[in-house]
Picture 1 (cartoon, helix red, strand yellow):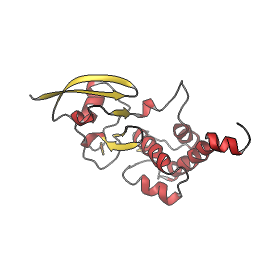
Picture 2 (tube, rainbow, N blue to C red):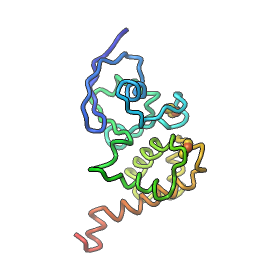
Picture 3 (cartoon, rainbow, N blue to C red):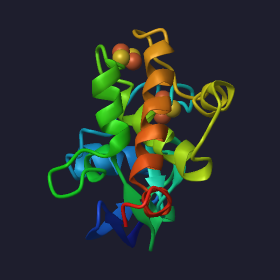
Picture 4 (spheres, rainbow, N blue to C red):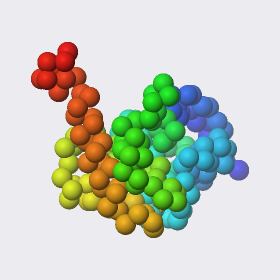
Length: 170
Ligand code: FES
Ligand code: FES
């Protein structure tokens, strides 16, 4: 079986693995590295459950991505969003809004929401719904997820240095 030595970072930790060239990033993360916060939904690019972020804010479907193509890349899974024990504002907002039921779609939804807000800190409801189009939730009906992204947008704006300066807090 042909393999490639591949080095990448996951949640700021470096890994070098000999990876069979046909193996997907989802298989490597879940089965080889036991990162079960990355979810296997459809395995065919249709549900978004397997979403991870590459090089900061670019969402990709790990079920459709060959792991060897990640050489030199920085991958973030939902477990990598917290900082010093504090949830990311998007994670916090999902909890506050009750935007989680079974939770299976949640890691992908949260990561996709982070990428939406990185690109557009003040998205409209339409922007949010469009941004989340590739992520399927079977439980929540999406309303609470959209509200969570709106809440996170407000929280992030309030905590940004520019806003704090404008409000005289810095
Ligand atoms: S598991 Fe990757 S899109 Fe469904
Ligand atoms: S919370 Fe169950 S699939 Fe979204």
